[in-house]
Image (cartoon, rainbow, N blue to C red; front, side):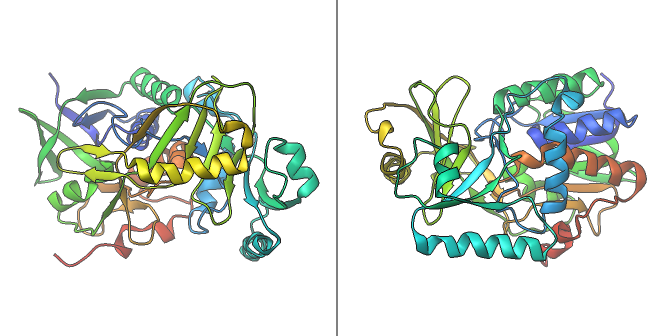
Length: 372
């Protein structure tokens, strides 16, 4: 087996797949090393929101580019990935909440962004007729929406493999060393070599970073979700609510997915996460109060996934400041799914051109590296 590549991507989640795909299409020979299996953790547990709404301004330039890519996702991976652009709406239940919508819109415009707009009660009722009548307004990003995480994983994997990417599942990285101009990576019982490493190891990215001499103080998230039985069409946009931990959408199959960032518990060394049903009850209560039709519905499944959380809740995207040939791509802190198409393009820029014209200065790894 040939274990020499131009680039090795450590981590087989969606960002790792995207990086590998873009690198391969740029002419690189690429290997993915995945400790479990592709999409095992955050990517496979994602609610798959495709959201620019309320996104941090440091991310918005690449997020808006990613949104254009989502609207043409079939050009990238020959699949629609189950993507629907029915908008995302941040709902104000009460008059006092409108101040928060207006503040966000005003700050976005000040930063030069115009993708968010405020809608009143009448249009809110038109777009989400099942919403409780006391809700008064919303902040909407009309080109937002949601995708299917499993279709997306399958599409990115198939496209990467078609481009020549080799994927090794069950190959956990245990050692990284530098031999001259070459990185040697021990995974399983094998040693792989490459000129470039891409650290896309998610909740375990700090461990990989430490192997090349970069120290990050990462936290972890175990965001929970649950899904109901199938129901008749209830809503098209993805709905969140001012002051409530809620994200609510309906899938193509008719099931309702309920999330909102409520946290379960993660055991990172054991690669296991656990649902906190008391916490999930908070999100369930919010749904039944805002969508009366959901009260008799049964919850058929609940889950949580593990991912890295940075101190500023912004991802780490860029080259290591001290380990030549290492690109870090992790720490998406619960909102990385939408960025997947563009992060791979950024990595390909960094590897093949030595830099990128895309705006990632606020995501530089240097901001979070700690003293060893």
